[in-house]
Length: 191
Image (cartoon, rainbow, N blue to C red; front, side):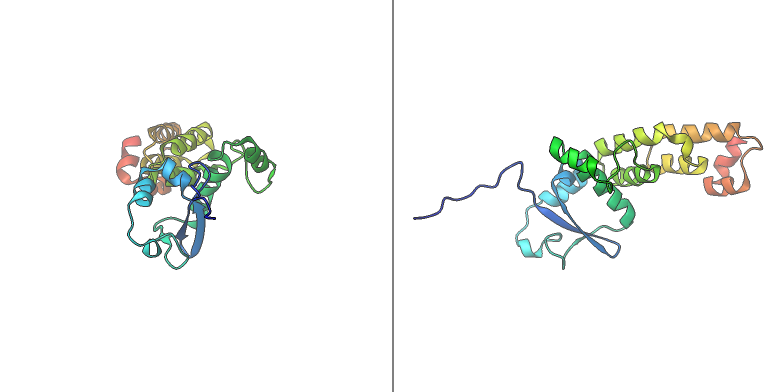
């Protein structure tokens, strides 16, 4: 008697991908990457002739993510898979009970900044919008020059505006250190 052919469940048969960031390997379900990012969607859904030759399927051939720090990537994964990606109440309950995984409201500002940088780089619009919301909500905690440079590099005009307004109203004007970090042209315009 022949066994019936099994069909992979369309919702709960996740394929993992191996990604290398700096000197560390990460193994993560590709589901959220495909769902959240056009960049990864294109990368992961291209037809491949030989599965063994495809990057991301084995430890020997991981997908290398250049220009990304381990801590930033880990923070993004933490957000994607522990808090944002899974909507199942049981999984959310387990995640909230874990002391290793911060809730959205207690996430550190540095974590939101990491999430913003990578979600901007990989065009993860929903995740990026969430990070922007939480950073803007706590923008006064971000050092003024970092606020401006982060706003510029991640295309968040509200952060740039907030930083510039703070500098304009700052007693004593722009310091030499701030001018060097922002660029002399910006510093002169503020003065």
